[in-house]
Image (cartoon, rainbow, N blue to C red; front, side, top):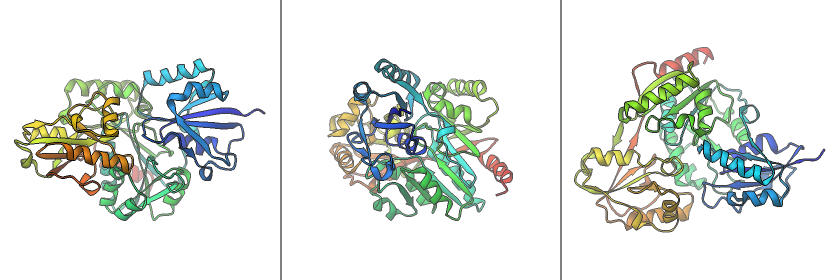
Length: 443
């Protein structure tokens, strides 16, 4: 039987997972290459032989997605598998048409072939877009479970931007683990809140190996902490999806967030206190149309500001979560809201002060103007972010990122931190849902 020749399109996450779970030991396929986008510097590397298995003793090359059409032709590719997330439906179909025009089949992979089964009950928290408040919802679920005396281990969607072999299985239990694994800003933003709570979180590259290690812990529940708007890597007993009324309609126009909307047992409508009523209504109607049996929880994201009074009358630089602003397409976040609420005299345009790859970020994501995305996909970019911040003539830096940037870069001016936490409005609540889950699974 002739093997099907395959390219997997990705961004250092879902692509590796789909390969590991379906293609790695499958004799019917030959994965010729990965293509990469979204993550700076990931292309022109290799998926290493140590992770690729016996069928790939030389590993698998990773190329820029810009070369996709030519790669299909050059390597006589039969099938191209799109394996990354937070993509407008138009974008997905454009890539499909390019693949078809080059002569190959276009494929998306679903839960049946990619979700792994755990020996423990699993709660998954996913979203319809980056920046909906998925992480704060995960923290809320974690806090509820721990308050009930339940032992929880979290597993985070992959962010392997360094040495993939070293990152096969990563366990984070204290701050020294962040340094040990040479974590980027993006990784720290997701892991630190769990460490702050004295809770263990896993991540890495091989999610079968990660799951089996997590199951060895003294654990009652596995908590999947999703990334972007991807669906869970694990078969799930309670599926929670977060939607954002600030971006009404996105719940049915972005891949694979719409799948999360339809699969959800529970849908959290977040940020209602700052959203337009019309936006909330659009989201509700789409939930009623596509998943009328879901439990709907209304929620707010109140600001927690370190020193709100210090913002008044100041010229401020606002730094926000990178992925939320870039491929999440948001124009603002917690820091911008705090600047307006607490009476900043001016929000400084960071673009004239940008250096290196930060300049490139503004060129690629030209919807950004008043906000600096906290890009930090490696030491060099973190230094460029630091230099950009320090170049500005701001009186004050407002840090709206999920971690305190002062831990990882040196800021030469006063700074305050702003963050969100999830707060349910009325009933049902997440605690009520979790009580039912625990009862059902005899936990």
